Length: 384
Ligand SMILES: Nc1ncnc2c1ncn2[C@@H]1O[C@H](COP(=O)(O)OP(=O)(O)O)[C@@H](O)[C@H]1O
Ligand SMILES: [Mg+2]
Image (cartoon, rainbow, N blue to C red; front, side, top):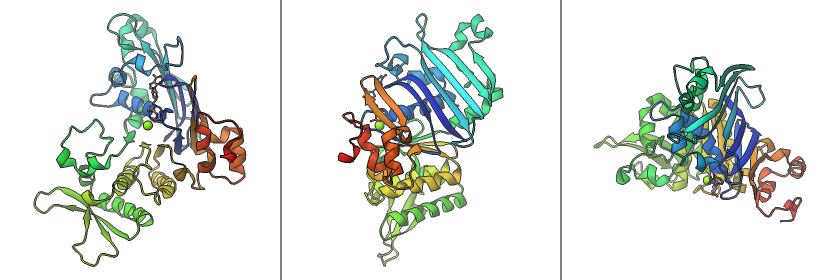
């Protein structure tokens, strides 16, 4: 299943978002346009339903409270609202719809308080809060029905789906020096500190087949690369990844992950997570530290790896090279355009002059990024 529509109101630097989403969706915009803020909507939903240490109040608190979430550009709007449509594919009608709205309680303990919470299965409204129980006991509005097993029996599937959302912003140094850094692993490990342990923990046959597929992808991307293997240190038992290259004759000549380039390590981590997940993977600027030769190959690889597992991949990026790949459809690119009234989010092929250029054979990478620049003047894309 995928989320094929996102509606949001008053979220960070967005006053309004109402966009369809594809199986592979690029979120494109300049620095500080809100790419991470948009991905954070999905992380917020996941945080609400997290089994240990989750919940609506914690999700709001971890973001600095309602006042930090409310859009500074929206005056006198208190309610923050999110709605998602969950469907089998980008083009099918939703099986589930989930909507939530909240504001800051004015009195009492300053909790975030629900203004509404609604669930539809197909078109049947299963939950419509506030309901009579909430009116009798308004304290109930500090918890969502979604996070409580006593109240979510009819729509538990939504929680299960959201719980598996994965956010990745891999930092090669964290993957590589996990022992030396010995830092606290951040919740859900977005930076990859536990990556090697994760590779070690899956069944050997699953591990072999995933590494084989990553090996195939690496061969396309890294010259002379030949083999990727999982090994354990003979003395300490520590898990390692090991690479062999074609031109090395000695069988001892192998590199372990602490010698891999940043780009190669990030690439392996990204591909692993696409193979591992069957829900939604949020990739934060995957082009960072990748060799320029690999970047154009990312889009088709993401698509192939994701499709296999039927997972949805939402990718924030600023890279026109990543988007130059001819296989990217204009509907797969969401443009974030900063304005004085906050950022607007638009599907690129719904913007008239972009659509004309795409129809005339330009790639999204060629036409889209210049449009997101704050000083864009309509029609000037070709003149740059
Ligand atoms: N509540 C808010 N209202 C308006 N703008 C906000 C709010 N919270 C954060 N921002 C702005 O969002 C921007 C950061 O967005 P971010 O998602 O990190 O951008 P990107 O990932 O595209 O670089 C910053 O300029 C920050 O000031
Ligand atoms: Mg960002």
